Amino acid sequence: MSLKKIMRLLSLLLPHPLFALLSFHATVQAFAIAQKKFPKTASNNGIGNAFRHALWCCFIMMYCCKVSSPEKALNFCKRITDMHEELFPNQPLETKMDLHNNKIGMDYFMELLPGIHRQFFEKNFFIDSLARKMDDAKVLKSLDDDFEGYLVYLND
Image (tube, helix red, strand yellow):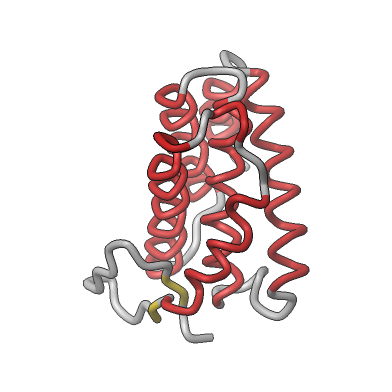
């Protein structure tokens, strides 16, 4: 990673050390759960990767909302997950897939927020429901594809 990229990352994380720690925790948990549920596709561009990205964002939002406002959590989640894609670049279609699934996770959390106090969210709220969303996930084949509201994956 270049010095410029390190500085950009630090400029996001240092002002929000608690969010940074919570995001790291969310990352580890989302990866472990996705690996268990989708062992063959959680680490590549398959259906498990779509699940992992959406779950990752739900977890970041859940943890950050426990210590701050949903608006600040959403802003941080968007910035950190977008920055992840910049710091560790993929092919354009893979990047589109990851950003799309990140948005699905953030949107899903925000959809649930009015009905549940943010202090009472738990991991299980997201795991089963996102796994069910995988039944309707779409295969992303082109940068022009638009599957608003659906998780997407590449047909590896």
